[in-house]
Amino acid sequence: MKGNRGPRLPFLPRFAREKIGLPAALFFCAFFFLAGLLGSSILIASPASQLDNVRRSKLLELDDDGAKWPTMPSGETGELTTSAIPFQVLSWRPRALYFPSFATEEQCQTIIKKAKSRLRPSTLALRKGETEENTQGIRTSSGTFLSASEDSSGVLHQIEEKIARATMIPREHGESFNVLRYEIGQKYACHYDAFNPAEYGPQKSQRVSILLMSWNNPS
Image 1 (cartoon, helix red, strand yellow):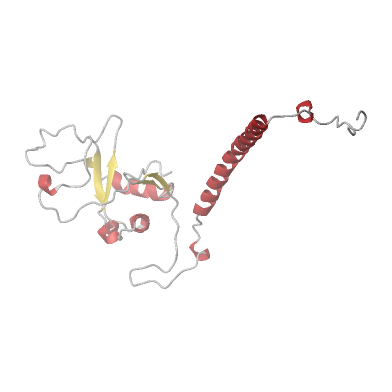
Image 2 (spheres, rainbow, N blue to C red):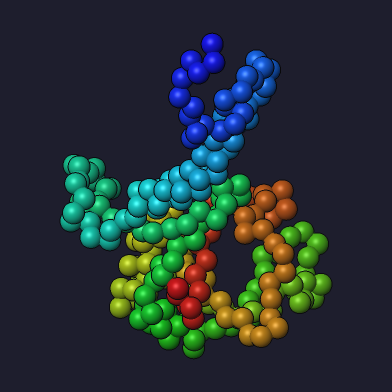
């Protein structure tokens, strides 16, 4: 009967007041669902990843004050206190780490002063068939070796202790400091820091870790 349809709802869209087929209704539901899902992913993904980075950086932040970290009973060759050395992983394969400000400016200047008067042209460990004449130009730097036992200031001993902690290799297994100086244009051609016994003959020991430091720019 006319006039018994009930009140009109002006706030509803026109298509909502008309009959909509089942396929059309399913299409609209799927469309709005996917649009909402995509929008929420865009809004949430970036802050979440940033939050993860912040959490990770906070988790990896270390304090040099060992007194605030709990300790455990140590063995005869262990240490009584905890320590923290900040580092950045540059690569896992091959493994390469960056240790910012590993030595202080004062320590660097002490080593430079001790090594400066002892610098001599750098030499090479020669393989079979190699001579000083046919290897000229491979290594053009100057350098010297410094041992912690020769350093009355104790600076080299302090750095050796820190290197041992950073590499987890006891300082007794380390070599003397090979202090090198490169003038502009000088170089050391591509080479291995380990010595293959098949090329260099039997070796008493082998290098398994190398730590490079810039004495002029410790940061």
